[in-house]
Image (cartoon, rainbow, N blue to C red; front, side, top):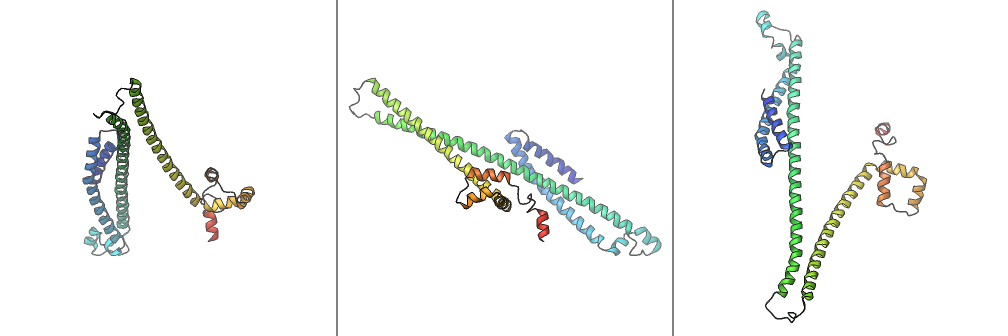
Length: 268
């Protein structure tokens, strides 16, 4: 069938995208998915129309009774209530259409998931290139500091340092190189601290989401823990480490027996 052929082509292109193929092959497969997805949408529309027609037939007893063409030719009429065989056949076809519609939806989901993974891969590649470009920019800037010192001393203007011994030259070179190295290390430290701050923000967001998901259970546990309750009433402030260790031991509101589905159902 058309769906089987389209499914085979889509699976082949998805395998090429997710496998360790070259970038040219993966990019070509991504472009090929667009007409295949359009064909898949067209098949989905046809399946939806066929299912709608079957629903209309199944809801009309007279139309189902009129499908006994041989009996109509022989007997001239068929009772409206005598349509069991046709109804069973139409329900079988409708179940088959449901399977085909589910297959189309699954293929669309696979395409969307693969496309999202491919986009993440491209984003990671761009991030790596941006990090390399940033490091090269920092290295260029630090080298420019030493080149600036060399430019000052390389001007054709007498400055009174020409008669100094060679140790002065070595000292200037050493100071320039050390300054460039320290500046580069400072840039690396700044990037590291920035990355640590971003990770800390992500952990804070994770803790906030965990607190919201376990808010009732956390409140219930604090009330049960007398020592912790007294400390909090006395003005003790939980540190982030204490809060995270406490969240690891607290079940979610859905898993807690006092706040689970049974408790909600009982309150209703």
